[in-house]
Each structure stands twice: as C-alpha cells, then as structure tokens.
Length: 246
Length: 347
Image 1 (cartoon, each protein chain N blue to C red):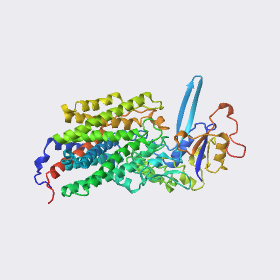
Image 2 (tube, chains in turn blue, cyan):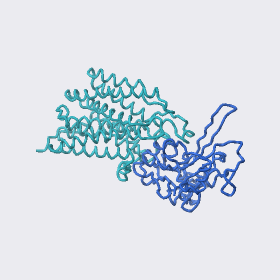
Image 3 (cartoon, rainbow over the protein chains, first blue to last red):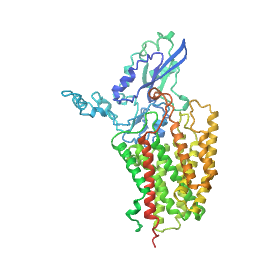
C-alpha cells in the first residue's frame, strides 16, 4: 500500500483550483503554498510552448528531506507511503528545505496568521481581526479549517517547516486530497500506486509518464502523464466508465 | 578563581567592545527567539550569514582543538605549555558558534532537542552530536588541567579530541556535500574544504590571540602550510568550475580568493598577527561564498516567488549575529584568561 498521484498534463488547464483548494483546506499562511506550480515558456514565436506543471510534495520513496532531518520530524509513514512532518519534533534547521530538490517545503518564519490576532479595529463599530476569528470559531484565521487539525496543527508553530501531506486527514476519512476533488478537468487521479490494478497504476501503465527530476533517485510518488497536445484535446484519457474524462 | 582579578580589569577598551557586541547582538538574538524574524531569508534561501557564523566559529574552534591534540600527541612543548589557554580558546569559539546557531534556529532548546530524537542518516545530527562530544571533551580536559590531574587519561583524551574534531569538521562539509539536486552543493570536496579551513582559521586564531614566540612559530608554520594547501584547493575548484558542464552551476570559487592565503603564507613573518587576521577573513569569505551560492538557484515553484537566481546581501540583524558570535567567544576567552590562567594546579 502506498498512495500516489497521477497528473494528466493533457487534461490540466492550469486553472490553479488545486492551489486554492489546498490553501483553504490546509490553512496555509500568506507566502506558503503546499500546492503550487512551475511554468515554462519555451520556443520562438510562432512556435512557442507554455507548460503549467502543478507541484507539491512528491512523497518520495527515497526522500532526501527525511534523510536530512536530524530529529525524525520529517518521516515516512510505512502504512501509507506518505512523507509526513511532526512539528513537535521540528527544530527549524531547514535541512529538509536545502535537501529537497523540488522546492516544496516552506518555513514559518513568523507565527502564521499573526495579523488575525490583532485587536485593533479599523473604525469604531467594526470587528477587529481577533473578534472575527472568535466570532467564526476559527483557529488562526476565520476560515481555518478545523478538520485539518485532526492530524496536523491548524496553525503551525513559528520556526517550523510545513509541506503537503496529501491531505492525510481526508484520506483517513476515505476522501481524496482536496486538490484532486477541486480539479475541474479530472486531471488529478489519486490512489494506491503500489497496486497494479488501481486506477492510477493503470494510467501510468497506459501512458507511461514520469516524476520530476527522477534521475536524482528520489522515486517520487507524483507521476505526470502525457504532454499537452491540442490535436488530442478531445481524445478520452481512459476508456469510458473507468474514470473521469475531459 | 584568580584572586587578582578586579573591576579595573573589565574597564578596558576590549571589554567595552565586547559588551557593545553582546548587547547589540544579544538584542537581535532575543528578538529573533521571542518576537519575530529579522533575517534576509526566504523559502528558497534559508541558510544565511547566521549559519555561516556558526560554521566559521565552530571550524575555528576545531582548528584550535586539532593543533592542541597534535601538540599533546607529538609532545611538542611549544604547544603543550599553552594547553589551558588553547582549551579556553577552543571552548570559547565553540560556544560563540553555538550562540549564533541558537539564534539561527530561533531557540536554545532546539540545540538540545537535536540530540534527543536522533536520525542517524542525517549529517546535521552527526554534526550536532560530534560537536557536543567535542565540547564535553574540551571541558573535561580543562577541568583536569585546572585540578592538575595529568596522567594516563591525557593521551586517550588527546586522540579522542583529534578524531572527534576532525570528524566534526568533515561532517560540516557533508551537510552540504550530501545534498542532491543543487548544482553548487555536492561531493566530498566540501568536507575537505571545511577540514582544511578549520586548520587555517584555527592556527590563525592561535597566532592572533596568543602571540608567544615559540607557539607563534609552530602554529604559524602549520598556518602557512595549510593556507597554501587551501589556496591550491580553491585553485582546483576554480579550474573545475571553469570547465564544468553541470547545468545551473554558479560557482562559488574565484581567483581573487587565492590572494589572502597566498599573501598570508608568503609574507607571514613580516606581520604574523595582521596576516593571520587576513587568513581568518579569507576563510570567512570562502565559507560564506560556498554556503550562500549553493542556495541562489531557486528550485521548482520557488523560482516563481523569488526568481530563477537570487542575490543575497546580509542585513544589519544578520551582521549583528556575527558580532554576537564573536563577542560571546571573545568574552569567554577573556574571562577564562582573567580567571583561570593564573590559577595554580591543586596540590
């Protein structure tokens, strides 16, 4: 058993719904995105090409961040294959960030969402930021998702790192990661990539595909299939009834 | 305790400078630990001048330890008769480095926690463990020296210090050398750089802070040899970088970096202390350059946030961490000299 994600580049429209859904689900502070993007523009007019590659923690089997972490704060979950982080053990040495070849780990240099702790009001009769948080019953910010707190702090401590967990709190309830559910084109598929009969494994078997910077030996669990080609925009990604199509 | 120490001993320009450094740097350290973040860092450039300060001072301490261990093992009287001042120097420099590291980590407690939840595959854990053992060994040796207990444990302690200090310096290089996917951090070369730079800066510190004729001659000889070796290493690196086909490599070495080491090695006898200081500044330049350059190329999504290649200049708060680390080291060395050097071994 090991979770993995397949991203179909033919189906991805670059709308960034995954990034927004992740931000809301995981209460990431300003300046930190667990799910983000790499964009590349190549070629010369009129033969130009624009690529949008959605990125997040690759939950590598051979994770450099786990090897570099001196305190085992960054660790592999043996049951799920997820690369997880324990902020209670994190000493803020940033070795995981330097070690990660994908640039997907961030530091909370300050206490996250700190402006929501302010009691100063813009004008008399208005809510202060702190009052808005209290009124909404949120944690850290009015829209802090309390469900996030079941496996990871809703507000992470200052001085510690954070990154994508593949929404482990949702997986525990049998749900897919928020970015997968938010994708309007069905470009993201999630499942047990160690099971050859799973949907994600079948997609990789059919289309090939590869992870980012695989030559480094990290064995990433996020696999990208198919480059975008306009002429096959309306081809089905997979046989009818086997999953989501365009 | 040396009973001859009086208040007047602290009313000196050196102590005033140290006090200013402790107050200014300490204010930055306390703010960083309890209030907010002041350093010129971001999520792609995370190790900046404060970490360089730790490595600079820790490696300088390592160099002093290595020279002392060498003297004890080889029974070199020019070194062994300065055992206590050299122990105080090594301890002071190491604690100055730890102070800078605690500021960089944002908490003193993080220095302790690193040892309590070990990950044996992590070079940083080994670095922390080895420097902790090194500090304990140095303190044990100092206490034994203060109590006048010399005998069967001297040689094992000297060998232990030699091995641990060398391993610690090599492990600091491994923290960077074992990183994958960054064009300017890779390979065992960085461990050789850190080990040799420890010897250069350690011997230079001995000449600078302990100018005694016989000791200056011995430490100066090692300094000149290692400075020339260091210059050769940098020249090799310059040649490698000039012909490298590694994509994205910026290169941290430059021909200009050879100058301080060649000048200091060749002209050493003309002005030993001044040229030792030049060697120390040269080592700081090299360490700063390789640590910062390795992070300037943004990886993955961080290129969107900070640009494909970043530039970095330390801000005032980071410079004050350098001042703090040096001030703590200087204060401890001065205190040790004032209170412990004159003390007679117990009967």
